[in-house]
Length: 483
Ligand code: B12
Image (tube, rainbow, N blue to C red; front, side, top):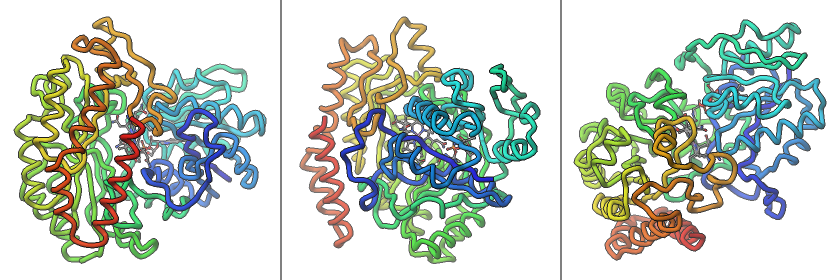
């Protein structure tokens, strides 16, 4: 069977028309691994699969429909997160208009998993919603379509019957066995066209890997992991990961890896073994990952540094302990100071992410967060105004306290907006404008500091660093102009 997997455009309006498409590499994007894994399982069973990742081609919904004509699929699968869900629904509608009811359209990913009922109701162009990890569910769907039978006994689905009735199947916690699943079908993406933002990138070509699923903490009130997207933590072995890295180097000449795991360091045994294996391989690659301040240890950082770790993304969130406790982040300010100090002494860069205007915050506490970012001396910092996503504990708390929250759909989170639209104003702030001003101040205060500029000049060790810092600087300057 011919199956097309699509990630919808990130931009909501028809702004892409004037832009040159597919020119050079696309910064700030890496391949969507979820559809890559689904494609791999389908290909293993002999199906003909294509992936269209609209953002990397700058495609809008009409472009996708045009490109689809060549392939003429028997099944369309759309993957979506909440901010672009409306684009996914629009795409399903355009496709149905073009192909009629004969082409089944299924949808999966973070948004349909969090909001399955809303998703099936959003458009009659959607024939089925898949909850959770999609690899084996899609395989079953394909089998049923080939046998012309229905989906009633495939768990974790909501589907539309020919008479329009909606059927929900049993919810089962199915967890893909990461050790035995094939590597994502990377040959289906223009893999060398992707690149992380300059500040997250040291060498090209760079690509992403994900070796675990689920978060071992899963309590943060602002995150979908604490509720609807909670998944049992599992990982593939360090040995399989080494195989994957060897494949990436050999096939694509990859020089840098970005680990997309929620917190790579939460599994210390895994990191320890992985570092031992990497030391034996002597691959010419560097890598970055995400971590939590409470799970990282100095010893592991030191070991990881020796085998190529150069940057870690930490969600420090706030410079106020009471706020960290309220959002159930489970870290202390001292733990943040520790990891920042360790990374700095080992020469590992830190990308710190901070949230402003969290519940319980006022401008004084907001300023404390900005000062904390400077104290930690992060190499890069982002200051995100809090958006309580529907479905999170934070969202429920905000509504219970009588607050209004702007919706999570469409261009609120659009990548072209440097400061996302303020969707929530906690009691401590007077207005959305006051928060927007604070966010702008945070970026100005953090980046335009003499110690910060000198630190970066001091770190230049060669042409590679000059190029990276220049592109990072121009990128930040561009963002600040937009702010
Ligand atoms: C990488 C990532 C990104 C990348 C995405 C690009 C990329 N190339 O992947 C970037 C940086 C762009 C990004 C942006 C955002 N992200 Co993000 N991101 C992630 C992250 C860390 C990893 C995604 C991943 O690769 N997972 C691994 C794969 C294997 O899992 P998966 O993608 O979920 O896919 C499986 C299933 O969902 C399902 N599935 C997926 N697609 C499909 C399609 C079909 C047809 C079917 C049947 C099934 C199916 O099957 C897949 C295989 O099992 C996740 C957290 C996580 N660890 O999952 C957050 C996460 C997905 N992001 C999230 C959020 C909130 C955002 C932002 C809104 C953040 C922001 N404030 O800007 C933006 C939104 C961007 C947008 N335009 O929509 C939330 C999603 C919440 C939601 N309701 O949508 C998550 C879950 C983080 C969290 N804990 O809250 N993100």
